[in-house]
Structures are given as structure tokens and as C-alpha cells.
Length: 380
Image (cartoon, rainbow, N blue to C red; front, side):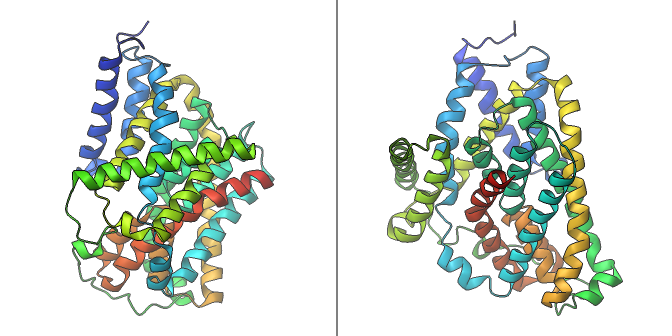
């Protein structure tokens, strides 16, 4: 029996929302930027439940999964203007496609060569989705293919995070490697980088719309309507497992064809991210700490091996396609780690012209990651 029982709704909600808020704050600290708020709150959820401070299972956890997660997905995609993305990322598009193809090939190859357990196909596809898009695609793909076992879910998410840290470390080494510079000469690489502070004009939501409660509630209402329509269509088609994919398609439709409405939205991305953080806390709370240690190891080996293969193959592919090393670094960062870190890397290196394309390339990854991940699972 936990200190806070599943029936103590407000006490349990205080913990869930409090940890989600803590996740936002911790990402402003040095340790939070290194480990990510998601991993920290996931770990705290595991600790609290395994110390019997909060329950391993509760009706509230199911509500978060079935209501807040679907509601968050359209809100995170409303700014995915694909026409704008494809028009502005320019030559980085080729580097993004190369990065996505190579990481997908690497994960699939290892999955075919080695046995990673009962859930290897689901985990492999979910990791592919995440490493083309981001945590949004991880969650969406896991739900679409019913990767619901909390231990395997947390194990996969742990591997995802460890792999991201390894990837960033290896990515930052590339400019120092003669073989990489010779394979992909870059007009951006200089001895002393010019530090660029990302400005508001470089942000994903660069329309200058100030916060508006009307804009936020309109976004919430639109997202809810998309979920309602998606659920109806899924039932009509007899494909209820693909409810998440259907609402992803509908959200992209609204983002690209109902732009006057989307321009009025406000803070929808931040609120959608908050919903996801609450979900990650519930996933951590549902997991058993002793089981995770054993479950996560093969998935960690899978993703670390795939990243090693990625860096070998991307040098060959980059040379063949005559890619620019700096553009490849930002595109690969956007693909594997997401738009925010891609923009931060470009700014930190002084590659001013690559900040906005890096952000937009990451948005493209959000748009396609789930579809690629589910396709991989079906193939495996």
C-alpha cells in the first residue's frame, strides 16, 4: 500500500503535475540540459512508486494516457507548416533524409541480426520514430503499436535517452576528425566559432503572436475536435489501434490547410509538451525498478550499436552525396535529437544561416517520424 493511494485524486495529481513542472524548471539548469527533463522526471516517477510513496497503478494514469496524450499530439503539430519547411530548409533536406535513412537502416540491421527479446520489433520501430522525430513520435508510435508494458516502455525510453547522449558526444567530435572534414568539406567550419544567441525570429513559433487565452482555448478545442473525429474514423475503418496515426494526419491537415485558424493559436506547443511531461511521470510510476535494469540493457546495446554504425555509414553516404559537414551535423541533430538542440548547436557554433533551417528540419522529423516507425514495425 502506497503512502498516496490511487483513490486520493488531488494528492496524486499534485505529485504528477508538480513533477511535470519540475521537469520544465530542471531543464534551465546545467544538469537538466545534459540529462533532459524527461529522463529526470521519468526517474523520479520510478523512485517515488518503488518507495511506495505513490501507487504503481491508478485510474488517473489511464486517464492521462487516453486523454492528455492524444490531446497533446495535435497541439505539438499545429506549427508543422510543411510547405514552409520544405521551402526554407534548402540543401539541408538531403542531409536530413540521409540521416533518417542511415539511422533507420542501422536499427533495423541490428534487430534482424540479434535477438533483443519479445518486444524487439515494437521497440525498434519506436526508437526509429523517436530518432527521426522526437519524444512526441516515441509516445505516438508506442501507443499505435500497443507497447504498453511499463517496464519495456521505460527500458526503451531509457535506451533512447542514453543513445541521445552518446550521439551528441560523437557528433561534436566530427569537426575534429580529419576523415570527416576530408569526406565532407564545409564552408561553415572555422577555427573560432562566432557565438550566435538564438533570437525570437529563430524560434519555431515566429509569428509574433502574444499569449492569448482565446488562442490557447481555441487550440485546445481544435485538438479535442481532431481527437473526436479521429476516434470516429478509427472505429468506422475498424482500425482503432491506429487512432494516433489518424489524428496525426488530421493535425497535419489543419496545420497546412487551415492556417488562418492556426495563426490565432497561442502557447499550444508549450501546453502540449506539459501534457507529455505528465504522461512521462505516470510511465515512470508504473514501472518496477528491479525489472527495468534487466529490460533496458538489450535496448541500450541496440541503440548504442546503431549509433556506432550510423557514424561509420554517414561518412560514406555524406561523401557520396557531397554533403556539407556543418549542414549534416545540424540535420542529423534535428533528426536524432529534435529542433531545439539543432538550433542551439547551430547558434553555439556560429552557423547563423543554419539556425532556422535546423528548427524547421526538426519539425519535418516530427511530421514523418511516427509513420516511418509504424512501417518499420509492420515490416519486422
